[in-house]
Image (tube, rainbow, N blue to C red; front, side, top):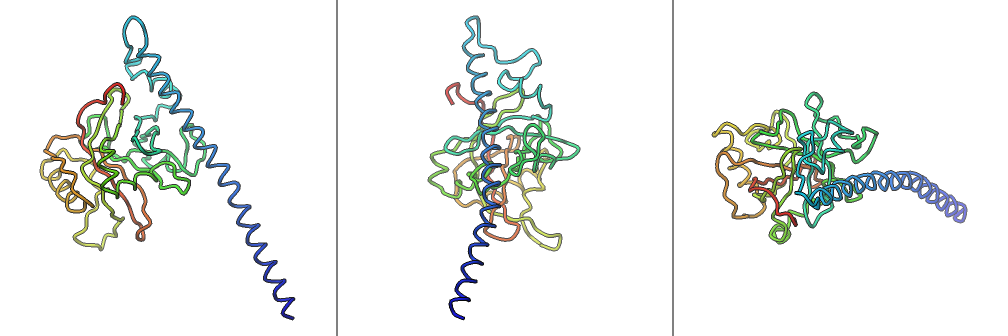
Length: 263
């Protein structure tokens, strides 16, 4: 009887392993395909910028469309492209999408619109290039892609070594300095006296701006020493976090100019 039970137990374990493997393999294949596609887009952007900058007559910054040369071909393929986000020291080097009528359209869609578990980075509702606040959302993927590396900013030493975020719109290159990193969560309507940072899409009102920055500073895991004044353009990067139910992790930065050519 003991041998029979032992045998049944081994069969059950084998069945679980086989089932788990049958789920894992497709996941790994899809993950590889999705990240390879993004790597190809990144290479295209980088090479196009290098070629444009190397033109003998003069560096060509803009295409005839008025869009930055490195993004023009991508924009012609998909008009939902709003910009590009890159952070040194992380895997974050991705296109950023914006669909005003359906902000979460790219939650589970790739750049070409096909189904993708990792989705795309995307901007929340109510945005324009002139907006005082740009809020970009992205998945925290188990394969380390998309916004997974954002949580590296929980470490103050990492933030000191990588204080800059590069976010370009279609017409302007932008460099942003980290103000704060913090943990939060999505709250219910009944929760009181909490910081719903994800609802601050518009910071054009001075009181709203100052309230947002005050709460960001209070929630911050450490002090970056970066001063913020009304009128600064703010960039907020948001992803899921598993420290609590409906957890979130956010990094907030302010625009400080354009990146150096070798950045």
